[in-house]
Image 1 (cartoon, rainbow, N blue to C red):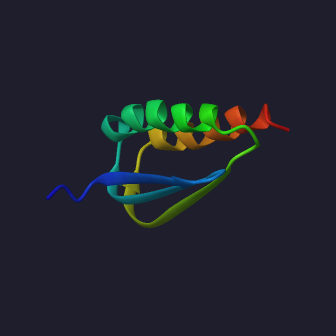
Image 2 (cartoon, rainbow, N blue to C red):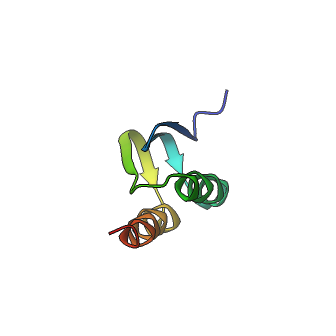
Length: 77
């Protein structure tokens, strides 16, 4: 079982992300595509919840993804 993963789920206009282990660019690129697709299907500004409590390491790509999500959500305001 891979200990390094990001799980994504949604309910109405809520999106939930839970990350485990070492989060690097290899995990970020597929997540970005899936997450942006989910955001585009929500009519109102989505609430995005991150659980980062089980991360042991995150690289700059993941931090950049978090910033990119914030910028994408800014257009809903």
